[in-house]
Image (cartoon, rainbow, N blue to C red; front, side, top):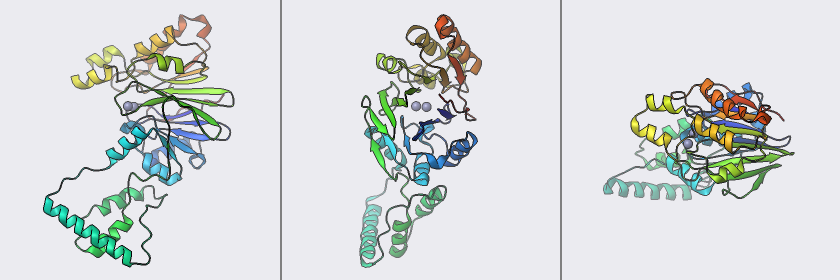
Length: 327
Ligand SMILES: [Zn+2]
Ligand SMILES: [Zn+2]
């Protein structure tokens, strides 16, 4: 497991077996994700797939561009994929006259395209990376002439285009290469959010961040895990006294918000089976937490179980990748 980034400004983690490499979430720009992979000694071109926990921006910011650049499939649940597409599809309103005009232009463009013998290129080309957004912006310009409109249709890049999409469902195990993936539902204010257990070559790694509380299904999923990336989002006092508006504090604290240091410590003390060699505390809030507080809460929870003192606790970082954790 290589945590590239963790926190409300972006999340992304590489999970690898000897044969397969999967990127969990792509919450930084394409360029930054590639920079961090290189920094951490992970070869971006060796990635086999991207898998998404949920559609919040801090988990998908670089998704489309990275998937097209690397030309790899993206695994979502169907509701999460739809939510992501909706998020990227701008809602436009236009007058009836403008709409009629739009329909006429589309019709003319189609007629022109049909008349042309070389009218096959209406799918975006994978691999354009950063030139993609420029093309999208360029194609937003209003065009007066049907000929120009046709050119725009041909060169317009769809930001929701992905080289391939694979659907999974929470609770149903599936494989990516030789990595077995078990997605589980988490309580969070997204469309169909989930955490994952990855299993390969006798090693089990799990990710559980962005959850308002620890329901029984998550506790059950996090058994017999060798490397556990677990949310420890906020210190309750810092959140209460902190800079967030009241409504945001309520959201974070709610049953579909984020796990506090205390909630994580309670899980470690009461429900955790002690199997992990490494516990990585992640999604730490920059405004409402301090790494020492998160570490202290987790260490105190483990201290009550002498058999768990061998568990190493690491803190995931927002600004830099962690060294790869290899078992
Ligand atoms: Zn998040
Ligand atoms: Zn989220």
